[in-house]
Structures are given as C-alpha cells and as structure tokens.
Image (cartoon, rainbow, N blue to C red):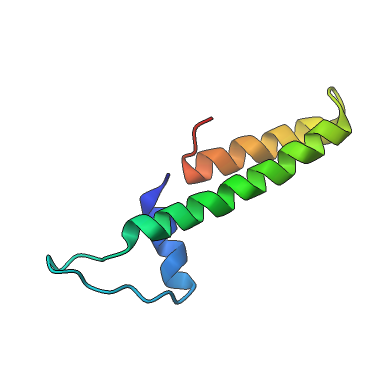
Length: 78
C-alpha cells in the first residue's frame, strides 16, 4: 500500500492524528489499512462489472485499465 498516499488522504479528510511517545504519528497503520480496504472495495466493484461485461468488449478493456490504474496508484498487488 502506498503509505504516503493513504496518510495524505487521511489528512485531507480531516482525520485527527495523535502523536505517539516517539513524536511520530500514531494510528498510521490503521489509516493505511482503511485506505487499502477502500481501494480493494473499488477494485471488487470493477471486477464484478468485468464479469457482467464479458471479455473482448470495450467495457472489459476499459475496466481492466481502471483496475491497473487503481492498483498502481495505491501500490496494491494481486
């Protein structure tokens, strides 16, 4: 998961980040996990659409491109 992107999204959403005893940000792992779960849900929705569209259609090819882009942006591996 792209940790920097996940934390940037959390900041943009106004999620409060508490300082831990080392002066770093606590709950980073939870913010990253949340962003990863949201991205995976989006991937799942696209995959369900792919199953309905069938292969070798313009919709299928467009959906595959969207999947690739989301996975790359969030650094999600299969």
